[in-house]
Amino acid sequence: MRPRFARVDRSAGFTLIEALVALIVLSVGLLGVAGLQLAGLRYTSSAGSRTQASYLVNDMMDRMRANVKSARNGDYNVGYGGVISGTSVAATDVTAWLAEIALVLPAGQGKIVVDSTTNLASVSVQWIDSRGNDPTETTCTGADCTLAFTTTTQL
Image (cartoon, rainbow, N blue to C red):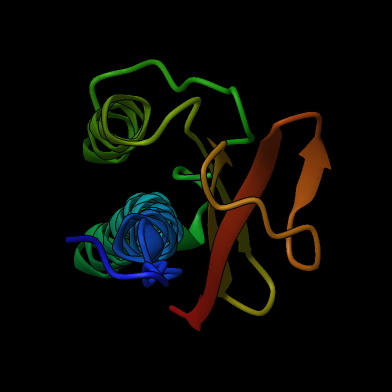
């Protein structure tokens, strides 16, 4: 015998909808985590380049302090993209330093200016930073930004 009034289950399929909504929420969360991971990798690479630039500038400062007489005479002076020829200690230091900059930093270049009257030495390194696009502190053209790190000291 069948009951006269069959009970209709209106909650049929509701668990499937809950599962789909939970899947969508989880997917959005995972996309957010992936975005954070990519941003972290980008900024870590940019910070590594800045650290290398700082190391390279301080390395040249130490080389000039070890050879103060030549540094004060301007033997270390070189512009961006410049080269120094010769076999003196200053020429060897600058050549090795420029080679290391080109090896370590993308499109890296170095510049040294020593004022012979004040004995102030300014050492700069510039490079292309395509990952840390921060237009407030860089010169950006397209996706590439040129960063520069400069230190000045008394010899």
